Image (cartoon, rainbow, N blue to C red; front, side, top):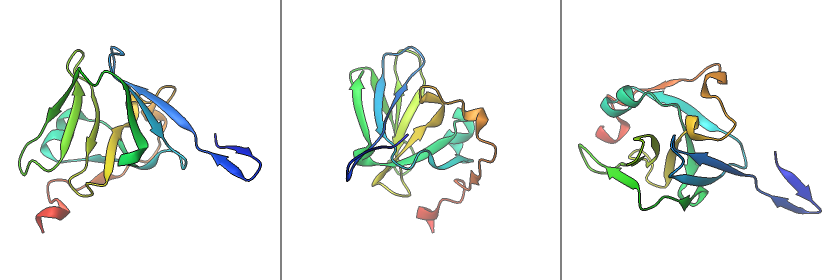
Length: 131
């Protein structure tokens, strides 16, 4: 929900956590869940998460920076983060747009990703950065 107070718009903040709660993120989602999708690249096929977009400034690590681990592969451009305690993927800096994070919709508190009725599949096998 977006709150209005006079002419100033207060942007909504949303909490996202890994499974064990060791990692907590705060996300600014003024437009809600933007561009949710699945991807068929080698890592996304395996993690199976629905991912949505947020600018780099839209995620703050509130707790657990010390337990977040980084995984990179192939070109090493994308930066995939996961909790080293429970193994849950929380977010990644995109290869296709390094100015954005993709975040795991399933980590958002109070959101069931299965409630999203149509989630397009991104062709990550034929990545646009490879063209």
